[in-house]
Image 1 (tube, rainbow, N blue to C red):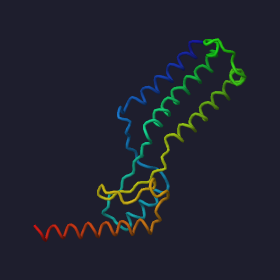
Image 2 (cartoon, rainbow, N blue to C red):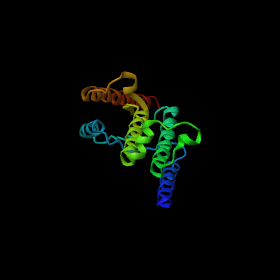
Image 3 (cartoon, rainbow, N blue to C red):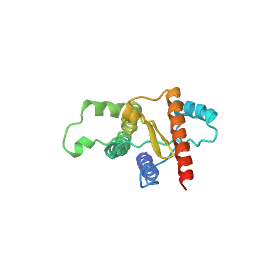
Length: 177
């Protein structure tokens, strides 16, 4: 039984290490699955069928990413210690707190609590609330700066103005050439 617990712990840590080692830069472009992004994308495709729309995650500041990564590893360590029944407090000569004793008596509940509570904190650390819009690599809207999302009417007006400005600038450069 002890070998089973130990092998499960090793397997969990190994799988976490493999999943975090895939991209050393920490930048992972992913399609956003948020409802707002999808609604805006559909509306903009109807109005501008030739436009290319991409969504990606906006990474939080590095310290938040590092804390979330540490918390993820620490979560697995705590869950592993709960499962195998080791008392980490005995290693430092301190009496185990009551919550640890409860966790040893209720391993499933304790593991679930650690898992969900840790995930809640990790998600909060990794969430930026960003909704940044660029057109031809020029920022046209920033939720981080404005504090809110643009309405669809605002967004269409901004894009129309930017596109008119780009067309005007392009025709101007062709006349001077």
